[in-house]
Length: 248
Image (cartoon, rainbow, N blue to C red):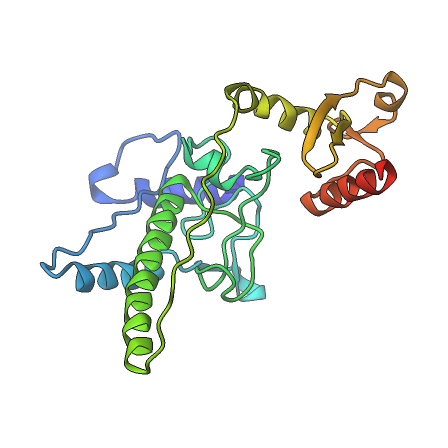
């Protein structure tokens, strides 16, 4: 929140009978979500989904002359209006505030319709409590989809449609050293250090090298990204395809 909102929230909390004559340094909103106690797990899950969607719906605040608008600051929770910059997200931080491939920091932007793709993305974010509830909501939605898929197979069976599973060839176990150094190569990619791959006649990766070219490293900008270096997974795949063509 901005300073005005912080002070206003402290005044409102301090005006409550149980809080009078007390001084508060800050106020942190707490989401009190009561899980369904229904015995039927399917009905309980659906009730939880319905309630979570209601709780996570972004709140509009009254701005006077300009009517109502959503909390628009990047560090504000779109539900509670809390300043999230000093709050601890725990394991949720790596899951929602880092790119799953490059591990670079990204901003998590909720949707006006709560579920991904529903409505439009906002400039605010979720507080840790709201984000944990959002994660639970997605888990519940995934469980609902699985239940629906079981019904789909039953419907197909009635129509005479069957599905034949195909067994994949056994996966060759990865050498322990590859797993150990995988993170190092990801860090090198983030810092713009070129990764050279050489392929054998079968098209398999035969040799991989990290190249510390001081002339190339001197042309960095921002967080160490090399000018012209791949910045997306697709760019990296395109670069590898070009390298294969040159070697052929």
